[in-house]
Image (cartoon, rainbow, N blue to C red):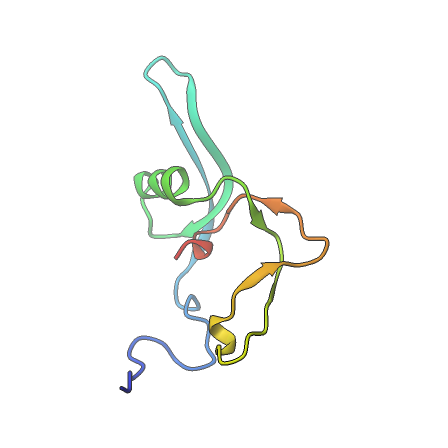
Length: 102
């Protein structure tokens, strides 16, 4: 089976045509107490504040994401599909960029 490329170009960043901007997501109760807050997260510029809040609260991992990874070479597995493990010395943090979840 052959699958032809339709929406991207080989060796090009798929996010190149999408502008991103830093945002803050803050969800508060009616009494003013903060339920959730995430600062300096990168979201597509055309996302509404509601879309930003939903993405940050529901889909970003809050912890356990390594800051750097390395591929594990496995016979018969193409490079783009190889599993990745935390790099030596990598710290764990949360996701701060929508590109990490798409």
